Length: 131
Image (cartoon, rainbow, N blue to C red; front, side, top):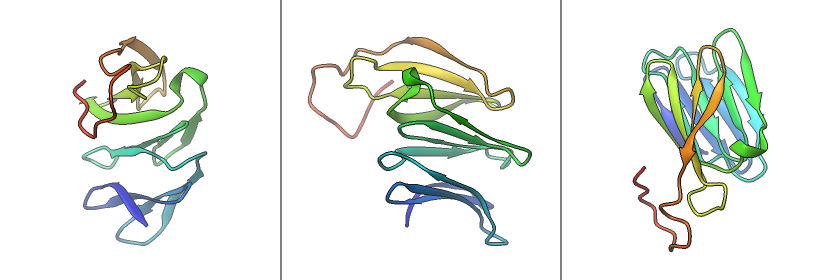
């Protein structure tokens, strides 16, 4: 299993195209989802109120619900970062023609495009993306 992200209480890991959110104390699997291709990134709220996993689609987990977002514009998520308590920014594949930065509200599951991101289009692959 490959760990995408973890806190003291929760852990996001994946094996091939399957991903799991696990409660580390009880061992309970809170989320089990399949991706086309491996999931690329994950993020967990510092207070463990939500978790988000990205790859060819986006999945958001809260203790009350799980929401899978399969929007053509949000395919091939490359990276996630915390903007504020309830907002996560999403970087779409920096080398693709659809490269862009989006944000999603982890409480309402609403999402919107912030801007295009063309800084890496036509350039060689690199592990470090500045966005």
